[in-house]
Image (cartoon, rainbow, N blue to C red; front, top):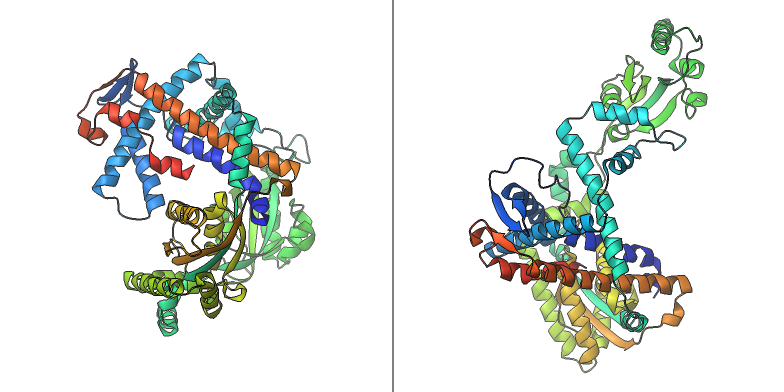
Length: 530
């Protein structure tokens, strides 16, 4: 329950974000009329879907699959991608029509205000001058893309809110979902890490032979002198740029005459945060500065002052106080990265074999859970000090809990987003087996981090009375949102099947099945994510 309480606010947004990604993904990536299509894919109730638009959605769906599967895409997966892209393209037409019918389309002025709202001054007010300058420096095509993105943002949330208001979920259904979602397991686990089959000597050797790959970002001890471009000139009859030109000459002349840069910064700088410290900004890495300032700063020699640099309508002089430093990161900081680099199929196979042997040893005992605890205590796993004990964990959120625990304690380092679905499907089913069949220990579960043998000492019904009123309402909103998403996807499926869809290309372009078969599906991959 503690884990659920700590993560409650994060969890509630997962359902809304997942809905937007899976139902509306790709809507607004340029619009149907963004460019002249060479041909059409299909006609949906008289509205055409261009082949160009379809290819854009295919590309996006393919990228989603790559991130989630983290593996080469085979022929069957590519077929699913084409089918899902076709469904989304049809969804797009249906939802755009719904937005028009319900008056949810965003006006040009609304879009302009949403974009302008990204440009604010120090007082938090919209800076229309900066906004106009931005528009003047981007291409018309880029401007259309930004406007389309904002149109998507506005209309997506409006349609979601409209659909939500059309649905009534009985409170009794929400209460049942609350009790089911809070059902808890007293969870134990034994983790088998493929990284444990790597020899320390191999890690040390790789570190020493590839030190250039583990260099920390360079850092420089800098001082700055800032002149504000938006400041009113001292003399009302003098242009601010002319005034800055005169200040530039004074600063450069006095620096050449030997006056310390820190003194010049105290005298001339208009940066309120550093002026009293003589412009000292401390040790800075390149990414902490805008590009033009970063390039100038890291080209300086110690004791050298830069030329005047213009950045964001302000004017800067930079001074390198101490030489640029760049060191090799200690092994402790990069060991996880090295393990990930060195892990091979062989290490994973050893982990699988080890997990299976341990599972057979555990289940051969009369008290399998006690044997799991004993082995966990002897292991080097992160639950060894607790005898393999995790906590009382709500079954509903078990995959997220385990993913967090494994991520924090794994020896390796993920180079891409973890595939939560691998954990989600197998672990949820495993835990249901423990409850329904009253098994104490389940077969090894393979995750992105390694193998996990899970056991449950007991389970208990949900404890909603342990929630505060605010937490209970948040959880109920989560359940309500999840059910709404389920109904909306069903509604979209019905709309797709009742729409008049004429395919203008061969069925091979949408995965090989008929349009009706594809549109009648709800991608299991999506619903598992939600």
